[in-house]
Amino acid sequence: MRWLVLLLAGLAAAVPAAAQNPSVAGLPAEKVDVALVLLSDVSGSINDGEFHLEKRGYRAAFTDPGVIAAIRSGVRGRIAVAYMEFAGAEQQRVVVGWRVLASGHDARAFGAAIAAAPRSFAGRTSISDGIVAALALLRQAPFQAQRRVIDVCGDGVNNSGPRIALARAAAARAGVVINALALINKWPQGYLYGAYQVPGGLTKYVSDQVIGGRGSFALEADGVASFADAIRRKLRQEIASR
Image (cartoon, rainbow, N blue to C red; front, side):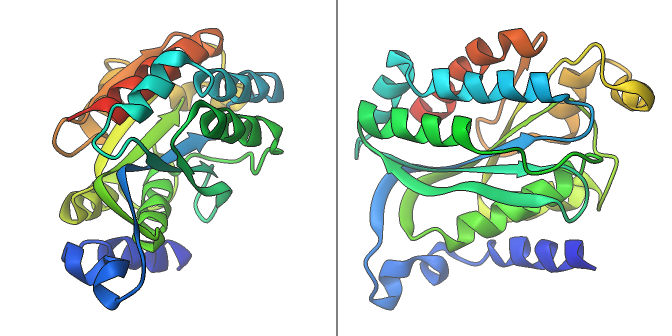
């Protein structure tokens, strides 16, 4: 099964840092403060209007002076970031590949690339497969990063693919932090409604089941309309985190 291949790739990310550092093999590796994968849920519960609101939210976040200041505030003053979308099992796609952001121009261009890209999927929700695919992407990144982070944004629970515990454990072994933004979708489409009502609410679910690693955190966006503000706050916190 493809998820098992992805899981093994994520587990391979847990090898010692020296073994996965390109510079150790004599190849150049750019030094960055953070290597960050933005992992965004595009499952069927999010309609096209909400999807476009999310994309505009990402674009707005990467024009935010606070986010740009956070990028510049690190020891090296630059980060590496990639944007990936996921839905059900075997539905993961790198939409915007690795870019180094070191200026406002870099950040705005990255946000514009996210906003311009078409939707990848609409299906079930496999947070676990998404995390494992993000781990594989981090492992392939040609950077020396002080921190490696997966930023999960979604509006539902894991209902496809392997258990989240397996993916989260692989991230922990690799020293990768997982943060999450719970997007509270009060009216998911049709038959999907029941799957998005969880005891204690979605924010508690991602806090208990998804996030992991030193300094990890979860934030909440109360509806898609507040997404832009929430993602700005989240990016500031995880980029500038020490």
